[in-house]
Image: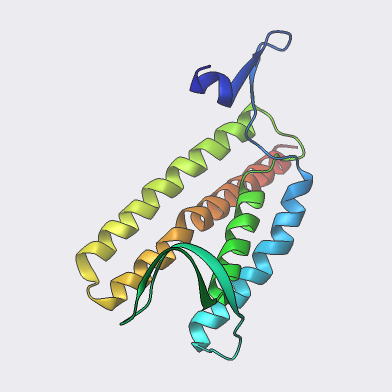
Length: 174
């Protein structure tokens, strides 16, 4: 089975391609419900640099490197998982928001989604190139951490802005 068959099927009755990879529309609301609180908490943790919230637990790690300590492979380690939980929730919420069908998903919306994704990847890598050229040392580690989330953030922002702009132009034509 080719990658084409996994990602797309051709509906002979409607004479259009149907995408298989989008979640049902109901996941968009759930995604916003997860994404907004996790983004706010993550933002506050970064800005306040506050360590009052800690959840220390033992987790399985494929690789764990303690600062000035031991390196662990395929073992259980005791760590604070607050950042992990916030990151996982942010990514899950972002994926649900970004990759859920719209109520009226059509070819035009699919085109907006694709263009927004391409635009987000391009802008993300232009920003990353800028950061490579002008940020050094430990600050660059922070850039790489934030870079894990920027493609998703830029994609969601661009896609929703495109949908909003499209809805304004449609209402102006009516």
